[in-house]
Length: 631
Image (cartoon, rainbow, N blue to C red; front, top):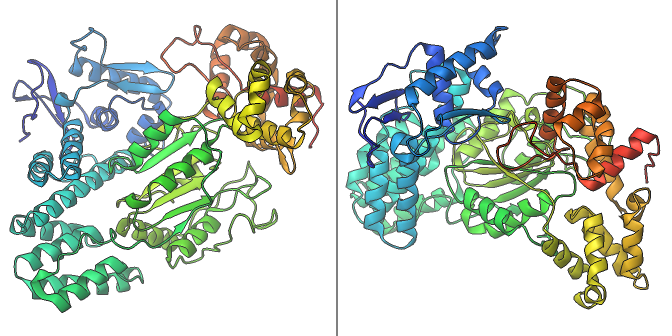
């Protein structure tokens, strides 16, 4: 039986539940949800509410192995059924399910979906706990848990895609349960949590935070022998299954219980002792990106989001943003913050086994078969992965060891400059409290569920601020108009503005106006953006190599109209010499690869104005006209 929402939906509205079997009620009466494939589509849309769901994701959920030729038509039928079930939006009368360039988007309110209500209550409970209002925190977290009726979507888990969404939801519920149990223990009411913790530990025996809460609740209830036995059982299980030891914090808790009796009540394991940090120095000239940084910090501070993709064209400052956030989040990830470069210095991709081996070395995990060769020491002949090669899969033993570590620790891992989805799919956490930031030029559209932050050019003021940090504010003020021309000629990309600033810092005699003239010349701009061993052209070349041969040809042809202020779909059809459908597919492929930007809001394909970053345009024109120079 499904519980009514804590915040009632409007009369006649449908209320859906995913935190158990997929169910729906209207005015207290259960609704039939149709055949299994239709329910799979509905479950996938509901699991990612108010977010575009790519057609490929829906297809994989319904037909994971061999979709029929009629798959897209069948999906349209299932989506139409979902529209009929949901009805129109009471606020504006529009359909609840709409199709756009990113896929199908289902619009639904908190009072109509249990997972949205669950998330709202959990956030409110954590906020109360942070304010020190533990009683309110415990009450709100308990209200959230009352919506959890068993394994999420347990009737549809034979679909791999739905099973992944269900595991994400279950991990979220477990995290909230841990929050609630720790709050009750802190309030001195450990007895209310003991039985529930025992049941959850039996279902999730490797989840350390649950074990610690169970130990603490037993200990506070005067059951010291049982609390110590929980640790001993866990230590033996870890050694037998994964070859690991409990975390230092959990071991410290055990020793405290042995030595101090019932008075020992340290905080949850992993919150007292960090395993270590392996981050490059924070970027000293980080400028702007205030809204994006705020969003990234909020996402990484929430247990609801485990994977965040930061995407944008070459030179847009993705790595700097990720590192800035990682340096600011030390207290939130007590088991460490780690940065791993996915490419070598020459731009070729490392193998997943190499990356996993380095992670094992950094985190202290024994990873079978991992080489652990750091990116900076791996030469171009050390198992380099060509752009068109199949990426070797990580061995099952290595993957299990890594996932076992992630399940037990709260760490932040930054995978920098990811070439594609296949490379990192096996490295992302399936459960546990760790978080991952992926930086990539492309959109990594095949990854789900993830949150996305897209970076473009800096605002004029931010770009000028960055330039001023490098050449000095006094010099910037000598000719502000020329300074503005410089940053705009750089496409307002942080990399290019930074290289231009470093060049001007050395050439102190060079007037800003003269340098602006040089950058304004399309045939010379990339030659001017070199400072020592840092070359914007080489960065553009690396991004170019990531594109397919078809995308390179298309981008070369679109670079001309793009330089003239962007292009429309009609302009793309003319430049590419093809029809509307082929032009749409080509432009959307370039958007997915991060080479073309599109409007942030929803517009029709014909009304959209597409753009290519100026410096990428110049590079593409060089390649198209045969003027390419490797310098």
